Image 1 (cartoon, rainbow, N blue to C red):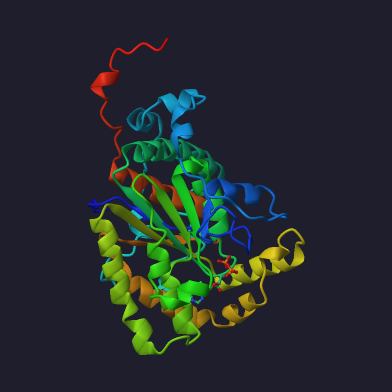
Image 2 (cartoon, rainbow, N blue to C red):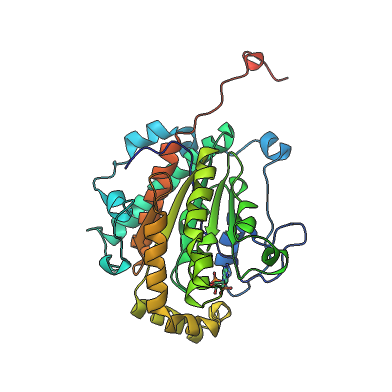
Length: 352
Ligand code: ADP
């Protein structure tokens, strides 16, 4: 894996079914991870969520320090087995390659054992959390994670299971629906640029600007000459973010057509899950081959050294979670966040 020169942002996002923005949040696409996590804990009662930012109170409050939190990332590394495989290389889409999702197996398990994978995920959570704390403390770089997948293919579950382990004060989730209101009065990147992660933050986008070369293409919402030039716009936009200190990782959750059908059926059959189902999901399902073609081209056109795509097998949720956690850990490690230097004025101070 080449060393990125800039920090990454991972975009994964989905709201908990909230249709109205929280009253104290200016941007309706913003939700915190903690909110997403809470929603997941009570999926039968989706509700509006509130954005939270770290402020003076957060800094002043004394954290309950668990033993594991006292360890720094390097000492954790010594206690957790290093990745024994080349999974990240296999997940990544090589820039300039002739990628096709058909050549990736959504049932892939990389030889992993389910119980061991769950145990490893718990270990990765601890390491990811430690790195995120440093990222927030250093406040020089950011990470953007983009999550793209078809309906019912695991975006919400991934956010909850992988990103929910971090301090929600430093992680923001943004869900992108069909553009509305002032969004339609601007260029397609306007609304996403508005919610890129600030220095020290991780942003997860549940759907993203890639919808503007996916659904827009598949449903013919714009003529070809208009969506086709967007690949270049996207590459240049992402280059800008990277140059300015954001690291980017884009993740496609690759679920099979059959598995999607089962999951949609589950949503219809389970009253607690039914709120997630839209009749329109079936229309999109009918367009599956067209979507796959659009994904292939979007990924080929925009997987670059500085802003790579990872295609994660999604039929097994435990494989998906571990694979995404490995990507997240890798991206944070590449940022290598460090605690800021001590203020000399603090040395030796005694609080009375
Ligand atoms: P999700 O499936 O992400 O949980 P929804 O069921 O509300 O959320 O679906 C969001 C819808 O918004 C999707 O059908 C998606 O294709 C659509 N959408 C997102 N971005 C755009 C866009 N730029 N143009 C048109 N449709 C979009």
